[in-house]
Amino acid sequence: MVTCPKCDAPLDVEEEELDEGDVLSCDECGASLKVASVNPVEIETEDEPGALVDEAFGYDEDDESEDDVEDEKEEEEWH
Image (cartoon, rainbow, N blue to C red; front, side, top):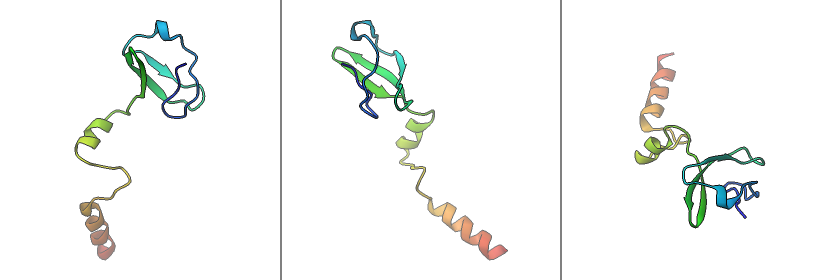
């Protein structure tokens, strides 16, 4: 049985009909999924565009860079 890597819900697909690179969608959580391997079957979540670039540079959307913090301080002092 093939399951969603994000929410572990079973996916309604036939393992024998999957090809590497196929794109799927989880009915439970809505995740966009991709078949990474067919022997054994491995399903992974599709990254949002630009995510690999952000990871390569160690950027996390929740983190504020020092430049952002400094810009905010200067803006507050200016007003």
